[in-house]
Image (cartoon, helix red, strand yellow):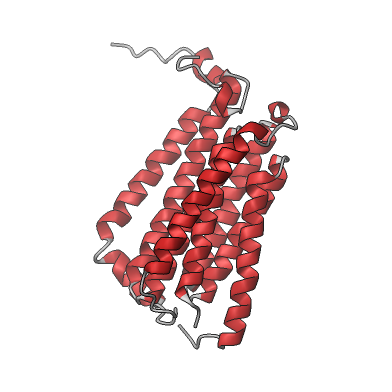
Length: 100
Length: 180
């Protein structure tokens, strides 16, 4: 028996911290870490509300969020590695070329 | 599923896990060392898995541990190690941009908190969905998104390999000339 609102507040705090990280970090990998925080806040919301209302689609969509987070991490880190190879940097604000 | 833990223990767990998650998240966005930030992300992920357990979503907790902590975090650590030469100590933010960003995220949190405070709350989480129900939902109502996710997953993995593969190997070898 857990108050629903405290969990929702927790996930919005997680989301806000993730947004702060996306806005302040310069390193592309650190930005990806902050995006993982945001995705975790979203899946926490899905699970909590699904459990609160007894609906299985909450957990199902949290599963989808986790799968998409895995895709995003794989592709994002591959892009970072390619960036490291072509531009020799991982700082997102130093990347200003469309064609290396 | 099963009997829910007693209220006192559930509240204790809730506060402990909330503190863990928030502290870990703050470490993720503020620590200068990227490796330590990634380890703090592991702390956050484990804390969220604990919260899943607390609201009775055991399967999601295991998936969270398996996929996030087992796979994604390992991938991130590998990427950090592979790019370690250009990381440098300046992994953290430029101090100039921190205050506007803090203002933006605090305003966002205030907005969300106001919205949450205004909703009529069911006040308790106590009607957990069982694993059988979840599985049945995944193969009946949600079978199309489930299949689409698997296609997206394959496409993302092939794309990641294509992007991350060493370009020298690709360019060095001449494409096999097909005899007409």
